[in-house]
Figure 1 (cartoon, rainbow, N blue to C red):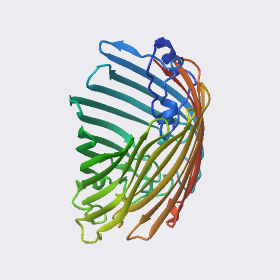
Figure 2 (figure 1 turned 60 degrees about the horizontal axis):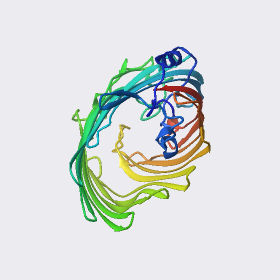
Figure 3 (figure 1 turned 90 degrees about the vertical axis):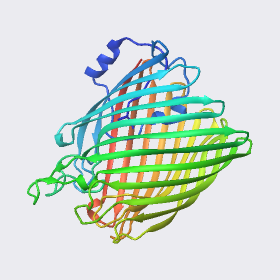
Figure 4 (figure 1 turned 90 degrees about the horizontal axis):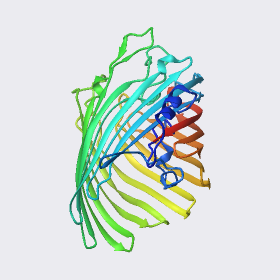
Length: 429
């Protein structure tokens, strides 16, 4: 939850605070989502929000998070190897303060070091930018771009890292892409057109010895995905809109065939529709359902046709509490041998509560089931977390939390349970 960088928004602090955090015992976490994405965490608190540094018509928001914790299963496998980890994350965001248009640029790094399992040490970085152009009243163009260097979580498509032939270290990859969207609103109608491109480049990974090969070839996983969509939304009632959306996506793998001899290129056409809610301080989000058909270039992979579902809602029973509900059903790509992909059905529930003005508690629980056609493999994954944040002043806050993952699989090498505890200290300007 705290491997991501927490960016400040308002007020200034001495640079010595960040230096002290970097050298001191502050703390962060190895691999999870940022709890600050909740409305409770992003809510304005003038007495605790840093102001940033003014730079002409921009504001600069630097931050630094350092932390430590205990991981109960470093390799996400049956070995249950435990280890302590230490982490340091840095972040920098440049945000425009214009009356029209918007430009935001963000950069962050995330580094993790383990006490004993040093093969798991890694540093990730990410650079992103977003621009919004207000062309005219009711019309805007948004452009997002990103480039990143990251590492794949253990146990994703291959087993851990202790048996012969397993990857000897986490698989590194590069991710680059951009998205463009044009939105025009008139009367009660809103039209949207957009698309994007994302490129993934996986490094070859050293293999645990003895093994037939010294490295694991990942060149056949390199791919370019493209997406184009069109959406029409009509305001049917106050704060509620009905929409229809069509999406066309393609996956183009660089290698003509993978190491198993399969061509994994595919295309998908999806149509869905639903409701958008924007009841201020009561309910916001989207509910939709539709139909998606995916075809593959390789005749060995049969085309799929599945019902798709997406739910993303936030309910505010009070100004101090946010309840989040998420659910989806979709067919995803995979590099698992002989499987064209997997059908993923996911659901989750989250609760954030402001116990005190400067003390926030959070809880999450989620369940996911993945079915792999062609190889008769099924995974059931249960996730949960408990966390808290204590706001010390405008420039410092403490985070602490625990999370667990339990995966049952019909393919026993992919079955594991893990838990992780961590705490962190964040400094921001």
